[in-house]
Length: 157
Image 1 (cartoon, rainbow, N blue to C red):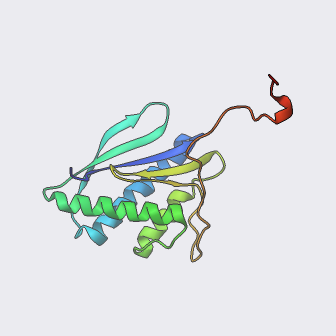
Image 2 (cartoon, rainbow, N blue to C red):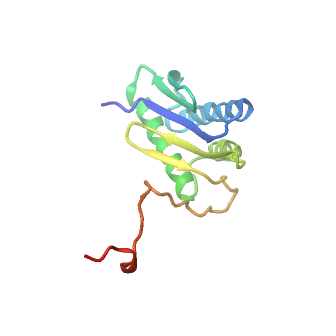
Image 3 (tube, helix red, strand yellow):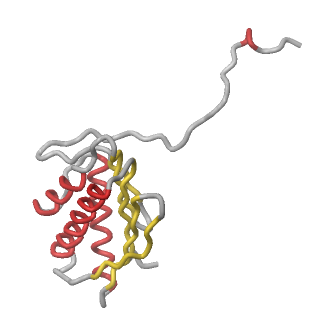
């Protein structure tokens, strides 16, 4: 299966202004990744899905050479991994600037950004810092509900 799609999502209370700003930087990020790893190929990113009730959009890359699209999607994964783990972004200053601007929408109301591909998913909840590494965020994969009992609370039979 070809890796030709990617998803960009904002989580929290999203305003139109923050979504528009983040999508503009997201578009610039894809353009810069196309220049760097896609031989400056004019890949067209078409909206595949917009999810109602959330700021989530999935895009499908269209270009004659599917390998170019896959290379850009893999670079997108590298960016997502670097942002979510607090590591340096392994691309140009232009890409790093796009990332700083995208993560700049994290303001307490916008609580997280999600970079997703068919194979991987990254959650970013901290702003990208210029020249310094952010501490990686820790996440819970679920919750547990129940009651903790002591021996004195149990019925003796």
